[in-house]
Image (cartoon, rainbow, N blue to C red):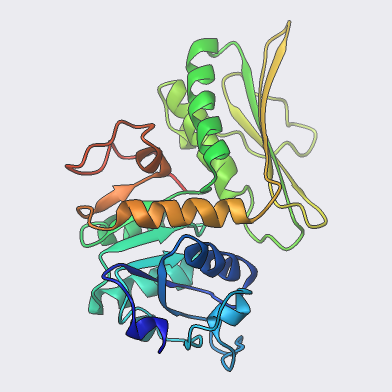
Length: 290
């Protein structure tokens, strides 16, 4: 008997199950006792002849990857997606034809127009979207917001992030999430405070702006630092991910939390209770989260 034949009322479907993050998500969901109803992989990528439980290093589920989100989510109530912007948006459109009510999005690199598409999808789905699903990062975000507000504009803010050489978007979604928090602490939005890259003879730092630095090397999972500097001292808040499973673990927490929620756009602040979210609906809209 397969898991789909013996599933509970709550089961998840996962995008990109043959990739590194997809396998971690399947493993974390199964380890948490969730039923995995299906999974997708991009056409031409595969492998489509292997069981997704086996791919994740867990038990055989009797389910293989498919290319169609509707088929993968036919028996699921929550969709988990850590793929790429175009694939995530295509899946959201397809999921309108399923019984999925909750969505967890860890995909990063969305354009402003794509963010608006997610906003519209939140009228139908309860969506938890975050640039990073680790508990430590989300606490770092809260601390960054507090520090930016308390230290004031006389302190420079610089965000440094390091990831593995294969990461395609820069700065990372997590770095931008931290930038949003810093801007929010100063009563503004990141688009108004973000500094362009320092490059060339006329790249003097502008007071009050938030700077970003990016490094890509080796197999670094993720390192993020937010530094606040005055003429007399520097304060640096840093988070280092030691195991990719931390992101999958947080996504499974979010999947458990989002089931049965009213449609809306939520963040990990809601999942962790950092925003004082109520059962009635989403907390106040996050600023460009993701």
